[in-house]
Length: 227
Image 1 (cartoon, rainbow, N blue to C red):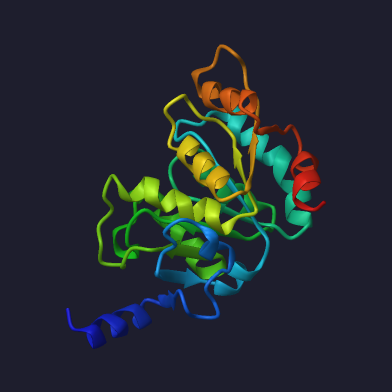
Image 2 (tube, rainbow, N blue to C red):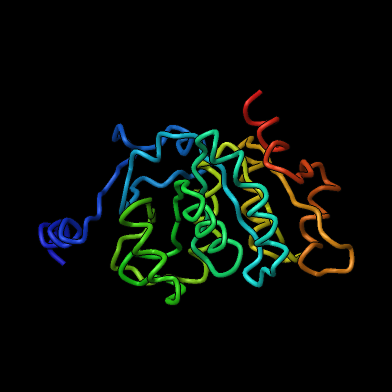
């Protein structure tokens, strides 16, 4: 497609293009391995300048994940933290929704282009976020999501944040990839402990054994991020 037509298409869909050299490009993201040269954004790009925390976890998250997020969020939002996640099923969706319900701001990082939202059932959530919060992707809006796009987008989720919280994760969860990126980037990693007989707690409990900070309240997170 002709470049001018593409730019016109982006403009008509309220999509901003942020390059590595632009003032709007987040400084923290420049510190990651292989930072994206271009970010496509829909929504309030001013959120990129505020302190943020990533919350990720299992796609098959249960009510324990919802209760945990509901417990952790209030002090974090009171301190002005933006909540970042990946707009996936389960924990990500809960993190975005609970943040908005509590009056906070949230950023969703996609694993594909804006015109091919995945998962499709999050279309309404994505539209709400694009109006009052922020959606980001390193992939052009016309690109369809590919399986390998999602692990790569995790470096952006952790790279934008001062720390990453893993709520629930089985032993092969993609959330553990996000935790690995955060560690590689020198960022804090937090994990919510879970029942020892639950597969959804295997990943988080292992992270805690390996040195991630066990958290049971938002104040536990603020202790590391504010001091």
